[in-house]
Amino acid sequence: MSNTQSTVILIARILLSFMFIMSGFGKLTDPAATAGMITGAGLPAATLLTYLAGLFELGTGLAVLLGFQVKIIGWALALFCAFTGAVFHSGTVAVPGWPDAALGWINALNGIMLMKNFTLAGAYILLATFGAGAYSLDARRGSVAIAA
Image (cartoon, rainbow, N blue to C red; front, side, top):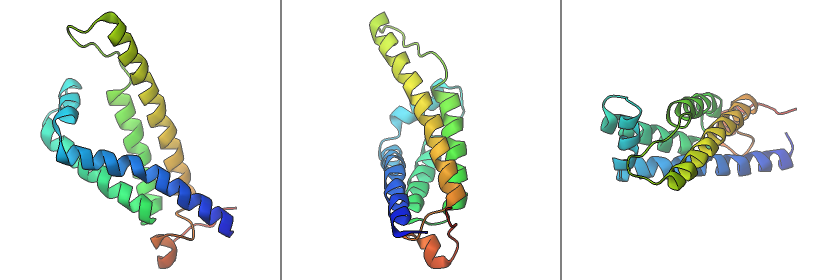
């Protein structure tokens, strides 16, 4: 793997980790909004699931950033993105008392979030397939894939 490829993978890992580190931290420090979404989706134990999601996101985000167990973490995040996209962003949002114009905007945003989740799933599949690159803990451990 060339230095350029390793640098590009490092930059991609940094960008792919940022959202999950920040989102996980947010869920752990202020779980109310996410717990509300989970309740709205009809899932039980919303606060517990929020904390579990926060720990998962923070932990996997840090693992991607550091390049640790990226082949496993990449698949886990791909599945997580697809699942959360399908469960939380695939339907129409109806908020009682909101004006139609606001609901139109929030539903358009929800569609964008669905596309974002599926796009990220693809990026994490690539990361899982090609590995963390030379600038990673996986490389130091000798478990990095070589990109063609």
